[in-house]
Length: 162
Image 1 (spheres, rainbow, N blue to C red):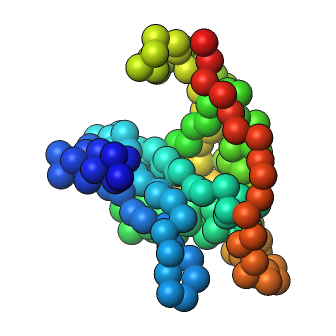
Image 2: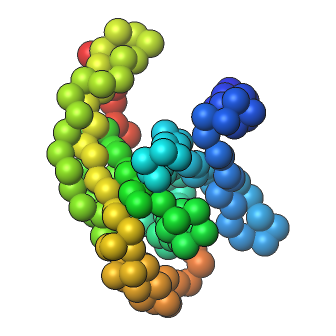
């Protein structure tokens, strides 16, 4: 509930544009995806995602990212979309690479946790000139058969740095 309130507050201030990721019928919420770090003068934006472990390694992430990427490039005409993942979260980095995003490297200790430690993030991007090839790749991935199973998985959580 706190995350939802925070996203709604940030959205009201124009800092982010949040969406709920829902699957199934009836639809159930399985995560959030949002535009953040919106830089109109630079024609750039970041996409951030949090998904339930129940939908990891399913087409949900691919489709959610595709929808926001398509809107960013084809409707908003951005030049650059960036994505980032905690350096320790190799699963998220693999998922971002799978989209076709280009690795740019780390931003060291740029975010301070409430408990005092710092996060290093690996940055990735997609440029407008790269979008047609990325779009084609994502559309091919989404065309693959999927049984719709969202069986819970037991991934290892990423512990905070201390």
